Amino acid sequence: MVPELLRSGDRIEVRRTWGGLHVDHFTVSSVSGPYHYADPGPSYPCFSVCLLDERGKAIGHINECVAVGGVVRGLFEANDLEIRVIECVRRGEGASAPESQTFEKVMGRAIQLSLF
Image (cartoon, rainbow, N blue to C red; front, side):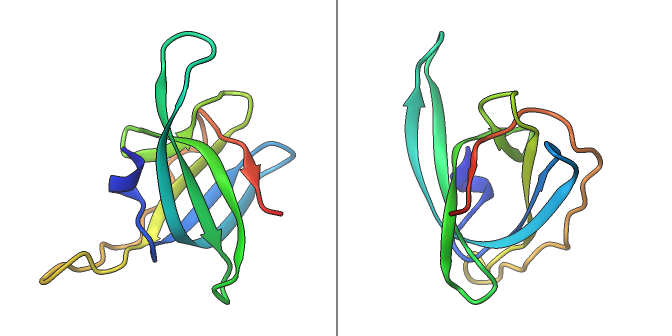
């Protein structure tokens, strides 16, 4: 589930390919949900990720996030977007931040991006 992959304070990399390749870096402010998107077909638990810029200012959110194979992607295939953690916040006593993750490919399902 998305809250297990993204937590408040994590630095993330957002890659999207519609209109050309775009790579943006943000900090996760919060993850909310699950919200259930039921049209069409079965209900899917989706999450919303609120974003902060490099100065800590709230700049928008990404809706309809789902976890697919350890990566946060979107519920819909119309857009091609992928979110991965590049730097984790400490998760309790004795926890350490993992090394930065890289993208092997930019393929798969995507979500709507609202930055303004």
